[in-house]
Length: 138
Image (cartoon, rainbow, N blue to C red):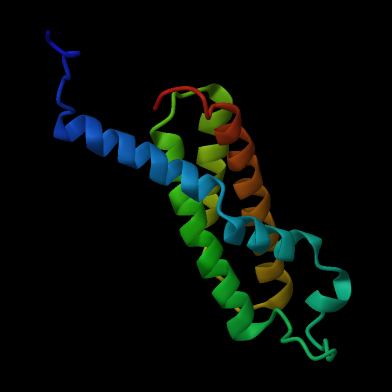
């Protein structure tokens, strides 16, 4: 009596499977959504340079940190998008994210805050498109 025939998983299949799982984990990471929520949903008081309610204002080093952190997240989203089936919408969103990521902080509060919000909106667009194609193989 013979059992079912098992086919060994090749190294490249295993790596592809792990890559897909890592991508999916990143797309569902609460930290990513918490950051986007903090950037896009904070009221005008928390973004004002003279904010004094016990929280650090989003200026200077704090704003630079958020920009650099979001830039890394956008890089990862663009990387994940590169492994998905290309669509015109995904191409447009990826191109927009890359262009926004190429612009360094200016050190000027209003310009940097606007840049951060545009980057967050680009990240949301990419997330929406990547979730829509989640069931498709990379």
